[in-house]
Length: 496
Image (tube, rainbow, N blue to C red; front, side, top):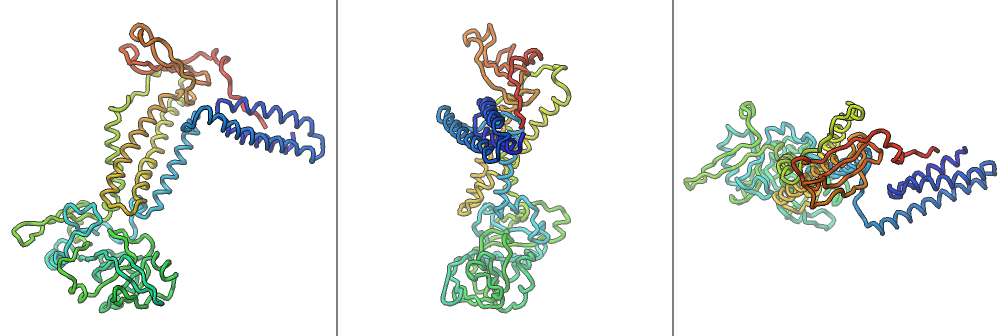
């Protein structure tokens, strides 16, 4: 048996995967027998004549492709059915890997999944927002409230910083301008969040002049990766600011997406209107952390009219993990709704000492657990990736869409998992085939009426009742005697 013949047999096996599973065995036997006759005729001939085997194997790909297209036209396009348990697990693994990879590309999802290492002491970093604005990207704190807190909340916060998002024209140089997203903030913003990738060593060099920090995207596209840009002056809406550095990619985890961070001096901050709206970031006092402060605190502040305004202080880690918390909540709702949409029992499988060893029992439950474990990353990262890639949507809209998609996909996936487990042979875990209707609906209470499925390996039959009755309320498995094996076609592999 020459190496060329083995290579052609490998090609036939590869081409057979294009043929539907019902015809694959016979198709492969027919082409393998024809290839054997050609090999017997040319095995002692020169190599030039032996190349006829390669031309024959190449024709197998054309025939398999035509047969696959023809069968698709006759039977219609359907979802793929994975009869083998290994094929099912491989397909789920590929989907889980794709969903995880797609999710981790997005910075917000990556920050939610991976521990946030950008900011030092992230447990003490909180974002203060007015009640009702904790889930939005809109500013909710006035500048006069921020100034009042800096004087009267030393027992709660060690330091506070204020910033607001603006759209401003920026003079880039050589007479060119661009409209960029500017995060105008107090000069202690990066000191409060304590981010090495943002603050660097040059933030405190010039306190009496405005400073600008470029995002990596703006530095690449607008300034062409100029490594000597630090120290130059940037003109932002007529205001000069000294460039102090470039922020690392995905290092900004607070609300708002900025191209440039403008650190204002104290004098410039005092010139801003008292009613200017923005975001407030603060550091909790160590005493609060030692007392076991939770992920969310509430603060009541007198508003001067004899009433109080409520503010929510959300720990940054909780804000980053909100997509995962939402998945857990909606997945729990889907679990609660599952019994109302489908039956939970997997069926009646009587004990059969000759066929049901401990390894077979354990393998069946391991297969069910493996499907569930592979579905978790698909159901978790899939909806998160779909919703968070729409960057133009508000946070509340993204959360609502994610919750609806997660609930629907989780409920559908759990129903599929149970249905797939019920339709598999408990011995070989192959998907049961050849459904046959047995009985008459009019005699449902006098005789058995339902559907029978069979294992192609000859292990047994599955009886699924049409209507649950007191004597047959769930599907039942019937083991076949080994003498029945002669009626089933064994999947004999073709050697090469």
